[in-house]
Length: 68
Image (tube, rainbow, N blue to C red):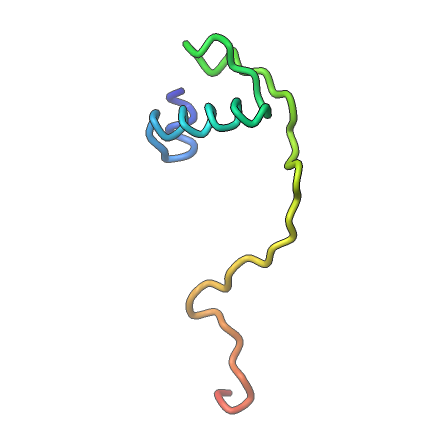
């Protein structure tokens, strides 16, 4: 779990909550919850892919012709 904390910057409680949500949605199987080594991935893709456009970061919006 420490590796996931370091790599994600999240707390153990948040990581466990995310993993439990994945288990509840049947993306993973995690019978022995003593360690993340016991996780079995059942599905490694999103079931309902949605095409979204990421938001434009502040300050990077395109200028219109009058602002150039």
